Length: 341
Image 1 (cartoon, rainbow, N blue to C red):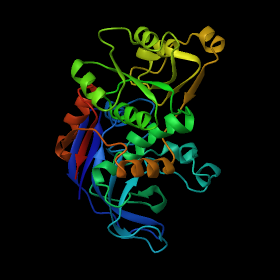
Image 2: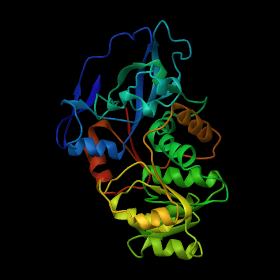
Image 3: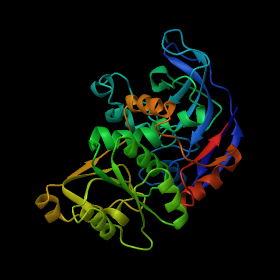
């Protein structure tokens, strides 16, 4: 079978490797059909120093496919099922995993495509508990965006920030994969959505997804516009994943008692926080990482009902992976870049 391996910083090769053996009793064999690219793939491609892993490394952190073989002990999955794959090889036995909070498992150091071999290959064996069945009729490309693109966002907005109908949320980078998902999920929940983008073309696309107000951050300071839109009150929730470039403005954009939830820092890892605003306005800063597998099931149900839909920028072949990573790093994208196998 074919796979895409990282051999060194920004050096990716496509080659043939052996098919996996028959699945263990608690495993399933998946024929990977679609892999959605994310910034974690870019970080791996850059060779981020904090990642402890050995090269070569198979890339791909978010994927879906079809079950083609089932271990003897697996009772909830069958050949032909379309499944989305959880992005970390969690233990399944610790208290967090038993409670359905796999993103708190100690095994989170084993992230597919970053610490251990990922999903950019034609076949893989995975523990059956990490394969989440898609609802009937949902296509595999949509299912591929459940683990990170939509699952992470649902966990951020609703499990952590507790966004409710009637509240206002500021979504940064509305043209990104998770940004486009956040606009849709927040709007479907009855929230007013303000989003930032970097071009007039992206502004039009963000508005078409349901954003009530779109701010081109290259033309005006987003925090000033947010204060005007909200009558100087500020927003109830800020959906952060940009980092230092937007952090201080995000704090200023919050209403009294507002919640900032963040899952990433694509512009750096250190930012300055106005502590006076933090305590005087009784703000809450929430870190969020990954999602529960229940989030994956929930967002696939929403996709199946037509409440939200993946936004596809480009579909690529495995051989063009490095081009997709370069475009993602340059932010030359609206929605998701997907590799189909």
